[in-house]
Image 1 (cartoon, rainbow, N blue to C red):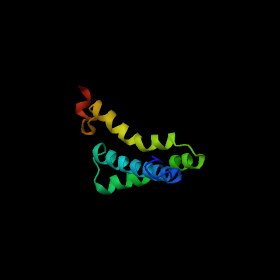
Image 2 (tube, one colour):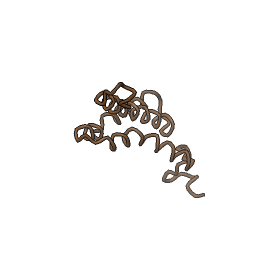
Image 3 (cartoon, rainbow, N blue to C red):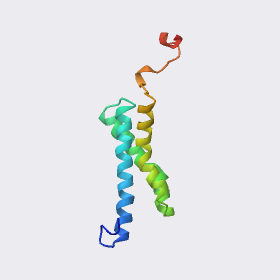
Image 4 (cartoon, rainbow, N blue to C red):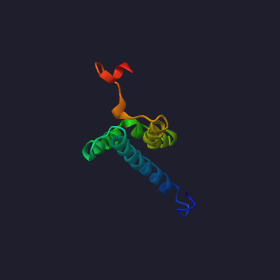
Length: 102
């Protein structure tokens, strides 16, 4: 990536850090929309809360890019696992629900 930015490795690291936080927020928004079935306001709140979690700031402070990349990809991995497992939030079991006797 430093080669694409004409040898500016510092700019490449900055773009990676900022991009990871943005991608993590977008992923959290999608998780809120698809799994929780929430509206735009609920999904935006989920994205803001996910971005404000101190995991990304701690990874930045320690100079570790691995946890930061995992922070960005984790919401998309959750979506992938939910799709593979065919998780349907409307088909959940509730205590006292007549469908729970299947």
